[in-house]
Length: 104
Image 1 (tube, rainbow, N blue to C red):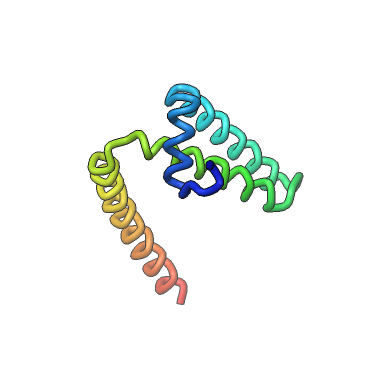
Image 2: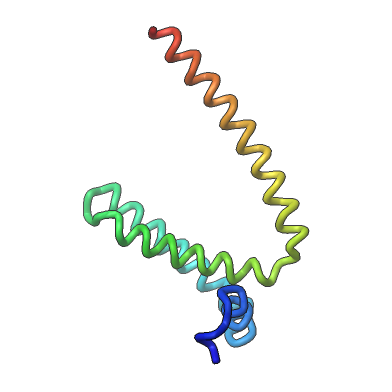
């Protein structure tokens, strides 16, 4: 019974039922809807709720697609990107601290 499946089991079942190509197309669609909802929110046309809804939809599709990817390869890329992100954040933080101390 589907309602007794874990989240990960549901993600895998969706790939099994609909296929990876259909689910990749759904990921594209969900990302596009997220972009639209963010733009509407930034223009004051909606509150934050549609953004959160589309963010969750995109996140679920991402989690679904991740079940079809080698976890070691995924984690290798994730670790590489997190190192780059931390480096960029460190540089930005130092620059911000310098700008604040120059004003002080």
